[in-house]
Length: 420
Image (cartoon, rainbow, N blue to C red):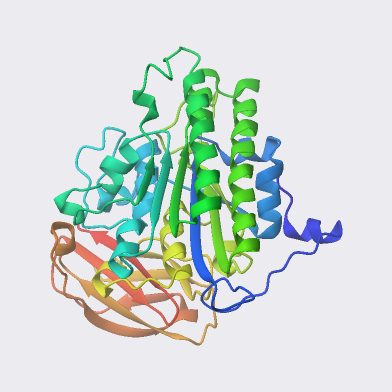
């Protein structure tokens, strides 16, 4: 159950919301930056808020909690199925399915031209250590794409996964208790390894809550599963707290889910109903920005948030593709959309969330070479004042696709306009 920060202050719990620019700040600026992000499967925001989650509450008290969403733009070019692996890859790449090309749990043909946060880390710092603790092997082998030519043969430095394939130690039962047991094993190892080894970037994936949703829907079984997962997250959080006490390290912790659940009974997901799209983010970050506090963040925002926290450089042409917005540090603009005017001009709208007098540049490309491993040529078509929140684009080269970028001082956002 989550209380907002205003109420916590009234109750006498002081919450620090000081902003220090582009990154979460630590008392010692030399502290090594470490990240663990945890995905607990299949919990709609209303379910989380009803459940007893003392550990997630404690993390949110240090940082913040927000409702969030998955599914891309409903009925738009980026509409994305509210399916598990699809959500995982949106989190890893900061893009929707129209780019990363994962449309279901079979993960048939991921487009690795949209790199995961692990590839970005390794491109910046090959020596930094990565880890994955997962109740599903495909997260490493297919989504991260370990040792594939298309991912430059990325290799996780430590992997603790694949136990769902071990039917001797984890015999499969209809009640899915074997998944519960695997979740516990995975989380225990994550807590141990983080406490003892302190990898730079870790992903923990827990599945049991989704299984209980599919099996029982809105039910005591599901709420018990949420409370069980909360306890596992608590052990990982304790390991992080211990690392920060013992070593000169600053940790960013982010916990989220991949999709909500069907409105009628909570058993299904995959569609675009409000409840299926409804998720949440819990973080220990104290300087969440105005975007996080006044807008509804999305699962795609996790990747650029980690990138900003860890000071990772991204090539410009890759940055233009990222759909997410960092929820720490300064941000100027959000929610870019393009429509056609009656005289067939492009009209852009966005949300200003910074000083309205700031300037930004509008860039357009009529190609999508990036999807095939190439680079698109962008042309600057105008400078705007971000407080105007709209702009009519002058005549541009005719194309079936326009990729549009709004480049402001503190962040860049993008959208597409398709002929049909």
